[in-house]
Length: 150
Image (cartoon, rainbow, N blue to C red; front, side):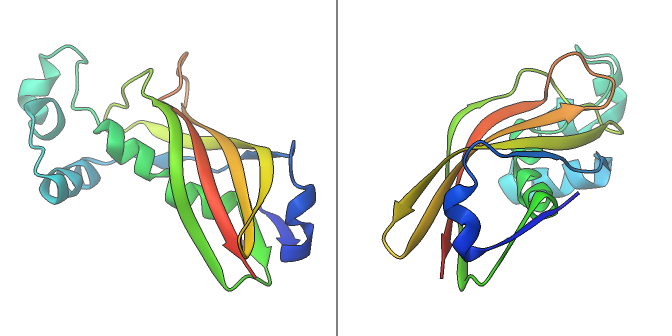
C-alpha cells in the first residue's frame, strides 16, 4: 500500500515503516536488456542452458539489476504531494546476500530511518530490503538517500 503525504509532513516521517511492495517477476528479457545496457554478458546471466549447469542451477539477475528495481518499488511505497523535485541522492551500505534466479518474484520492504533538512528540502534515509519470495535471505540490503524539494 502506498503512503501518501504532503511535503509539510516529511519532517515527521522518521521511524515510519512503509511496509512492502507487491511482487515483480524477474524475467530473462530484463536480464538480457540489462546485460546489453551495462555490457555485462557473463554466462551466469545470459546463457540459460549453460547456467542450468552452473552454481545457481539457472541464470541469475545481475545484482545491480535487482538493486535498480528499488526505483519502481520506491514509487509504490511513498507518494509525496506538493514537491517540485524528487531526487535519488545515493546509496549507503549496499549488499547482495542472495542471487535472484530468473523467474523469481521479488518485492521491497522499506523503513524511513532519518529525515534531515537540506538546502531547499528534506533528505530521507531509508533502509530498503529486496526480498525473494520463499527465500531465506534477501537479494539486496541497502540504505537509500532520497531528496524532496518544495
